Length: 64
Image (tube, rainbow, N blue to C red; front, side, top):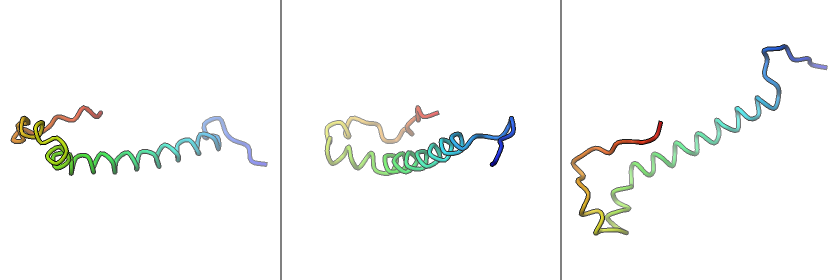
């Protein structure tokens, strides 16, 4: 039988932390894809909107 100390995380805490880390990796990949291909997506599907954007200005990320 393994006893946990007052400051050691439970198995549930460890699983939740691991699941959160895995989810964060998926999130990072999608953010990279959107950043790399957003202008191409707009140009192809929404050419009118694409033409109205000043692409010389860098976008400001609202992600913390």
